[in-house]
Image 1: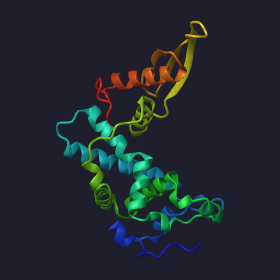
Image 2 (image 1 turned 120 degrees about the vertical axis):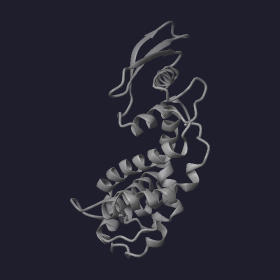
Image 3 (image 1 turned 30 degrees about the horizontal axis):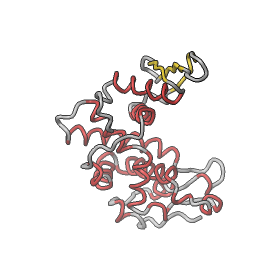
Image 4 (image 1 turned 180 degrees about the horizontal axis):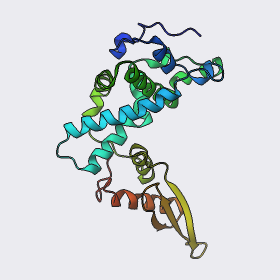
Length: 233
């Protein structure tokens, strides 16, 4: 497939690349090229970090009275994959992604995973091409409406913990069954959750799922991400 025209996204992105190869790389899925060719994966890695830094700085300035837990909750919601995918849809990135025939036929241009990664790759490409200033300008425009929304409520404690741990760079939470006690009709499960660089937490529940949720909540409360009944992100 041919590289995208250099001007195709300039108006949408509000940025004109000096090195068009960076834009082409940011839009290239592995299915479109052979092994060893440049794809968006490395740029996505960089863009993810740039996005987190810029959003954190914007939130810090915009919410002077917010504590660390509130800022973390807002940050997690704004940098999550689904949000990046929504931004990609808003600016029409899907039509410009280079995909292999198989991926294209299975709806790759509409998949959250691909759209979210390409959005972050674009941020990484802008950063390499123009520096932090243009990257911030793009993020401020693309995320503007979302920055002023009320913090959305997370699905559950496990989801909250996973997203918060990712944003803070702690890695994936790991759950482990410590014990199962009680009769078959009324079992009790004790689960531990370990987040890299943090102390583990334990909780007991009537099922593994309940115990896992309780263990995740214990970490969120302990780290100040949740405040009692305020389970908003």
